[in-house]
Image 1 (cartoon, rainbow, N blue to C red):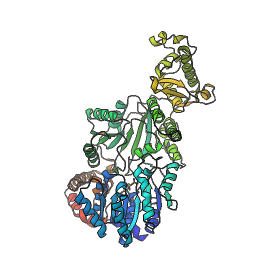
Image 2 (spheres, helix red, strand yellow; image 1 turned 30 degrees about the horizontal axis):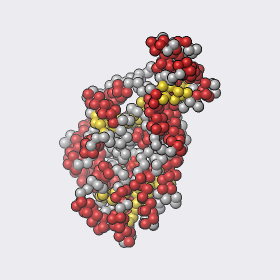
Image 3 (cartoon, rainbow, N blue to C red; image 1 turned 45 degrees about the horizontal axis):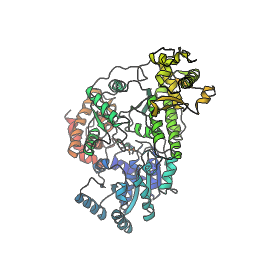
Image 4 (cartoon, rainbow, N blue to C red; image 1 turned 45 degrees about the vertical axis):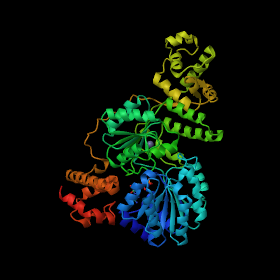
Amino acid sequence: MDNALSILQQVFGYPQFRGPQAGIVAHVIGGGDALVLMPTGGGKSLCYQIPAIARQRAGQGVTIVVSPLIALMHDQVGALHEAGVEAAFLNSSLGYDEAIAVERRLARGDLTLLYAAPERVTTPRFLEQLDALHRRGQLALFAIDEAHCVSQWGHDFRPEYRALTVLHERFAGVPRIALTATADALTRADIVERLQLQDARRFVSSFDRPNIRYRIAEKKEPAAQLLRFIQHEHEGESGIVYCQTRKRVEDMAQSLQQQGIAALPYHAGLDAGLRQRHQDRFLREEGLVMVATIAFGMGIDKPDVRFVAHLDMPKNIEGYYQETGRAGRDGLPSEAWMLYGLQDVVNQRRMIDESPAGEDFKQVMRGKLDALLALAEATDCRRVRLLGYFGEASQPCGNCDNCLAPPQVWDGTDAARKLLSTVYRVQQASGIGFGAGHVMDILRGRRTDKVAQHGHDQVSTFGLGADFSEAQLRGVLRQLVAIGALAVDAQAFNTLKLTEGSRAVLRGERPVLLRESVAQGANGRKRREPRDRSALPAAAAGLTEAGQARFAALKAWRGEVARAHNLPAYVIFHDATLAAIAALGPQSIEALEGVSGIGARKLEAYGEEVMRVLRGV
Ligand code: ADP
Ligand code: ZN
């Protein structure tokens, strides 16, 4: 164990292991198999990087890291290189000569870690190279990152992962560690079975991300709500905005740009080169907002993403948690903010209904959607519900919208019954269905042209809901669709239809409790003054004036180094490390030792320069 801790301190410059890392690392160094479930930002990489270094030093050879994240391998390997670790990657971005050069290093035993995509790992050519290493006892470990990709229940199924069973069969005795940040019970069981990890030790961390504040608000004017959210609360900060469709991505990116916010679009319809450039800019520049479909983000390890906004609702809680988890990897305060409205419910239900999948599969997907809808409509702690979904009990968190400003709850049972019976009666009277707006008009007793034209002022519920506001009725409607007591027929102009589930509500057997739409400002939170444009990043918040000057100088220097090495700035040093140096104001290189994030190699490479920068302030 001393060995592992000294690698953590010397190579990575961190004083101690976090959470279950120590146990995992010890188990894997000892040759055990492991399945690691840890939230995004929990520190999974070190769980295989440290065993890789320890086993290489013990003469056991190379660790093969299987990862689907081709676009990020360059930066991951760059970060190891900065820490003085021999690493390389093999993927389709390399030219023939480069790939051959990497294969030579592999054969010579020069590598500690080799990153490769699953389709590469399972080629006959690569497997033969591994055979040769295996025969010489030079195959130390397999690390299977993003292991949920093997499961069709996960949110990112990749068929190539299924072929990875060959590792176990062909290289029996070589330990394997599989890691993932998302896995509900079903996905977990699937990973174990598909990768044959029945005998692996399981390490399940708490999935809590206490520094992330969860907020879910009603969708009204998404573009304007998003703009206010960014301008008032996250001006100048890095963030990701998720949208459902490519078109919406384009529109939102443009509308933010027009308001002077540095925003870039990202979706699978853009050409690969442009996509890569946008991703690189997001990783390398500060304060960029990426507006994207879920095509963006897997493996994005930028530590200082301050917010993740969802303008449309994802499919399920796993997806939501994975995406929101990209905020605040550095542990500093961050926000997950989602807008949600009736149309989201309708769209997601329709996508399931219309998918070509079998009925069993659809049933599972509906169950998962329902769990997310319940989260969106919840009036109690969001975090308790999120963690509960992953099988973890917890107490109200004090850091979500519902904890911070408990919503008023009102009993919408009566309104719900009146709404459903109006839907029923107009259908009876006219023989066709009608949309939500019209049904609400009838209930509220509004004699619109359409109401008059169809004679719907004669319906017995006409005007019975005059006491309810339109916002209230909308809430009731959304809730009814969310719990499956009302359907929206997308094939017939979004008309409302009763369902099996309507009966229980109509009979008053199923109460309908709703959040009151409080007039609190459109984002479900009191308005704050716009922040100062020159606001310091979260890491530097507590610094004195002199400390701030040192921090600014260090950042400028780091930017130059990062550009020269073609790597993101955080790979050189995290903000938190620069802030710690700035706070310390060291007088000598020795004083830099022990600052979290400065390992031996970085001290040697950058110590003098850091001192020179500090003397110049
Ligand atoms: P994950 O892959 O689980 O999302 P990472 O491996 O990217 O997380 O780690 C998240 C961040 O936490 C990284 O910036 C990493 O350097 C940092 N980190 C990991 N372990 C430690 C530790 N023991 N001490 C300090 N920082 C750590
Ligand atoms: Zn809470």
